[in-house]
Amino acid sequence: MSGAGSEHGAFVVAIDGPAAAGKGTLARRLADEFGFAYLDTGSLYRAVALALIRAGLPAPDEAEAEAAARALDFALLASPDLRREETGNLASVVAAMPAVRAALVDAQRQFGARPPGGKPGAVIDGRDIGTVICPDAPVKLFLTASTEARALRRFRELTAKDQPADMARIRAEIEARDARDAGRATAPLKAADDAHLLDTSDLAIEEVFAKAKAIIERARQSRT
Ligand code: DC
Image (cartoon, rainbow, N blue to C red; front, side, top):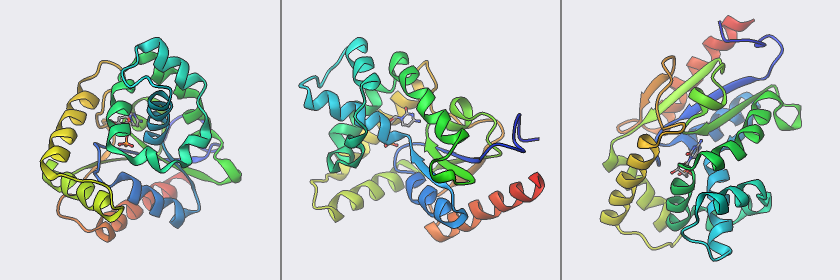
């Protein structure tokens, strides 16, 4: 029921959704709970963007962005600059380029097929995990929240880190990012047909976590 190889493969929890819907927080908690590895795929696109910004290419063409993706320095994944709005915005631009996505597919699939540390499963979050990267994942979650709720979350994250934050600008950037992520031709942001939809606008993280945990436990039981 969960796709080819499920008896032998790692157990993948695919989490997709728009910017600031709470994917990262939920994914990290679930990975801890089940002893799974965690991959935030947005950080890969952000690392490509950061490499381009540092190389003085804030408006790269597809060939430049692909070259940056293929030569990706994984040390960039630890940079605090990854979380800057500027990095996120360029990440969304390069993520719309098919050659960049193609350059990053294998690493993501490998992570799901053989999670690091010999862990029995992986939680992978992004925009196209349930649809393109791991279409056979036994659990797919699609997190949504209103634009207002997501903008407020981003605002609080930034101010907590003493970074400049302006609500109107954040809201406009989230809207622009949603439009780009959902409107692109290659692997657009969209829920898989078999994804569980969770609207987190009015839910505390504990409630979202409890719902997701129950879904995973049910799927794990039905797999044994
Ligand atoms: O989740 P995030 O904000 O860190 O992602 C940054 C950008 O990367 C986002 O605007 C779209 C892109 N992205 C993507 O296209 N596919 C993914 N699987 C993850 C992120």
